[in-house]
View 1 (cartoon, rainbow, N blue to C red):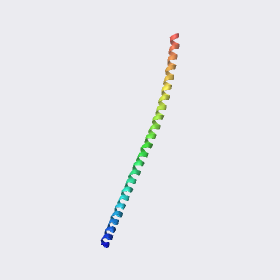
View 2: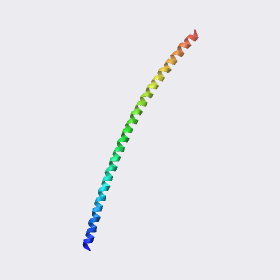
View 3: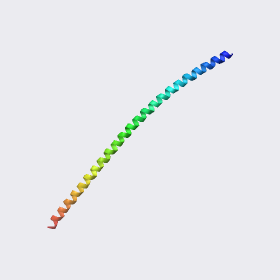
Length: 86
């Protein structure tokens, strides 16, 4: 009886160890997948940041162009008004 119980205990221990190894392999795979997902997320974040910077630079250029256009329009209006007074 003791032999049967000891054999069952050894078999149960072996199955526990094997399933533990399988779980650790799954955990490693999960960690690798998480690391890959984090790398992709960081790459996307960098792309978004660079796109935002480019958009901000373009907006600043557009604002500068609008100021120049407004100054040119004011100058043209001033010249027109001078000619109208004559």
